[in-house]
Image 1 (spheres, rainbow over the protein chains, first blue to last red):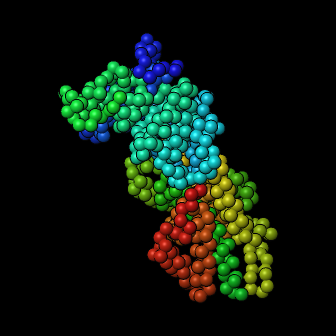
Image 2 (image 1 turned 180 degrees about the vertical axis):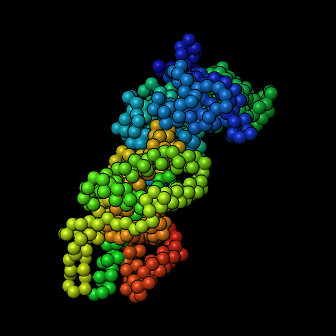
Image 3 (image 1 turned 120 degrees about the vertical axis):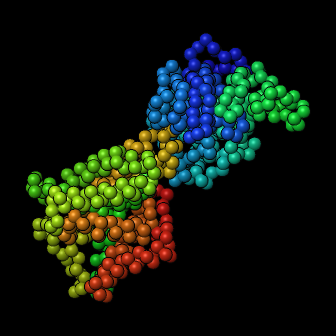
Amino acid sequence: MSEPPNGARPENGTPLLEVRDLTVNHGQLRALDSISLQVFPGEVYAIIGANGAGKSTLLRTIAGLHRPTEGSILLDSTDVTKVRPERRAIRGITMVPEGRRLFPSLTVEENLQVGATYARKGPWTIERVYELFSWMRDRRGQRTAQLSGGEQQSVAISRALVANPRVLLLDELSLGLAPVVVQRIYAMLPQILATGLTVLLVEQDVSQALRVASHLQCLLEGRTTLEGTPSDVTPEQVEAAYFGLRSAPAGERGEPLWSG
Amino acid sequence: MVWVNDVIQGILIGGLYALFACGLSLMFGVMKVVNLAHGDLAVVGGYIAVGVIAVTHIPVLWSFVIVVPLMALLGYVLQRTVIQAALDRSVLTTLLVTFGLSIVIENGLLQFVNANSHSLGVGNAIITSSFSIGSQITIAYLLLLIFVVAVVVLLGLQYFLSVSRYGRMIRAVADDKEAAQLSGIDYRHVFGIAAAIAFGTVALAGIAYGMTSQFAPSTGTDTILLFAFAAVVIGGLGSLWGTLLGGVILGVAQAIGAQINGSDELLAGYIVFLVVLVLRPQGLIARGAAS
C-alpha cells in the first residue's frame, strides 16, 4: 500500500477508519459539528485548522477519550463508538497525544515497554525502533525528562509504534518544537509508512501537513470547510478555509500561508 | 544502655508502622486516594484472622495465608466499585467515601462482633521468648520477626514495582492514566491491583499488630490510622523507603518519649511528626521515581 502522495484515493476499497456525522459537545460548546471522514489503508490523512477548530477533539474522540453526542466511528467496518479507549488501542487505534505525555518516572525503555504491553502482531518491536532512532538505544535507561523536546516526541511516536497500530493518530507533532526538529520528525514518516501503517494526523503547521498528506480536511469552529487531496486544492482555498474567509486572494494578505 | 535499648525497640516497632503505612502511601501515590478507612481495614484483617483461626485451627503465625488473599480480594472489589465510583466524581469525594467506609466498618464490627478487645496469641514458645544483649537490651523474637517481615514486604513491593510488568503498569498509570489508556491499559484494573496490594499489606500489619497488642473496633481510627499517617508524612509520601524511615523515626521517638515519661510516648511521636511537617512538609525522602 505505498500510495504516492497527491495520488488518487482508492475510493472503491473499504476505508480502514471511518467517521460518520460526528458531533461532540464540551458542555455548552459544540466542539465538532457533524464531521465525516474516511481514511483508506496506507493513507496519510491530515486534519488542518487553526487553534480551537476542533482538531484535537476529533482525534481524541476517535481514540475514545471523548464521548460523541452523535455519530459513529468505524474501524474496518466495525462500529467502535462505544468501545473504551484502552480496548480501541488494543484493536489498533493508537494515538500519540498532544504534548507527548510520556511517563516521567519511567525510563525511555520502560515507556516503550508500556507501549508494547498489549501490542498487536506486527513489524514494530523495541529493537526495530532503536534501529530507526539510533540515539535511543544508548539513552534507554534515562528518564524522559532528560531528553529534548524533539527526542521526547520521538519516544512518544515510538511508544505508539511498538503497539503495532493499524491506524496511528498523531496529534500536533510540531507543538512546542523548533521548525528544524519538526522537519526531522516528519522526515521519518515515509520510513514509518513503509511498514504498512495508516496515519491520521492533526497539524497546525499547514505547509508541513500538506507536504506529507495524501488527503486533507480543514476544520473551522468544528465544521468541515475544505476537503480534498493536496493537488486538488489551491493555497487560496486552503487559506480561505483555514481562516473562514469567503474569498481572499493570497497576494493581498501579505505572507502566503503555504508556499509550494 | 537504656537509651540504646529504647532506640532498638523503636526501630523494631517502626517496622510494624511502616507495614501499616505502605498501603496508605501506595494508594495515594497511584490513585490519589487518601484512604481514611486504612486503619479500620487493619483491624478487619485482625478480626478475620481471629475468625479464621477459630474455624480452621491453623497456627496464628500462618493465618496470613488465608487473611491476606481475602483482604486483597476485598481491596480489588472495593476499589472497582465504591472507590472508583467516588474517583469518577472527584478526588475529594474519595475522602468522604473512605471516611464513611471507616464509620461503617467500625460500627459494623461493634454490631456484629463486640466491643471487647481481642488479640492473636502466638502460642509458640520460641517466638514469644526473647534474647538479651548485655544486661539492658532485650529483644523479643516476635518484634524482630515482624520487623524482618516488614522489610521483606517493602523490598518485595519495591522489586515488584520496578521490574515486573504489572509494576511498570502501576507506575505508568500513576504518572498519567490517560496516556496509559492510549497504550491499551485499563487503569481501573490497575487501580484494583494497587488496592489489592494495599489491602493485603494492611491485613498483614493488622495480624502483626494483633500478635503484639490488644485491638478493638475503635483501634483502627484511634491508633493505627494516625500512626500510618505520621509514618507516611515523616518519611515522604509515595516513597517506600521513606515509609520505612518514617515508621522507624516514629517508633524511636515514641520509645524515647516513653523512657522520659510514661505518658509522653504518643506525644513524642506527634511532636516529631509536627516538626517534620513544619520544616520539611514533603517528608524526609521526597517521592522517589521508582515508587
